[in-house]
Length: 99
Image (tube, rainbow, N blue to C red; front, side):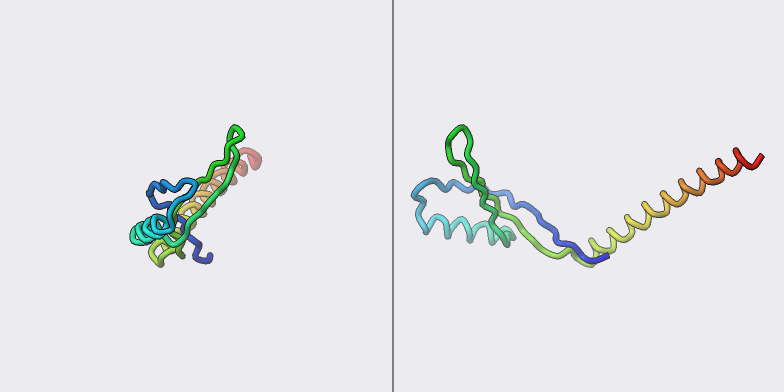
């Protein structure tokens, strides 16, 4: 198993509108970067014939060694549970059909 990318949204309200000042954009970017943001996602859509932007700050990073180890432990627990379930079913079927 390889380490995966972790994406976490950062709570921040962007109040940008048409004609927003560059200084306001820089201030907002500095603020979200201070909160740990590494990326800004901007999505455009049209709602009821009106243009709408959704702006979300997020932190993207590779999972830590601790998160990776927890993931491995979780996968091992699931594997063991499935194995035990299969073995129980096999024993039940053997008992049913070998008599």
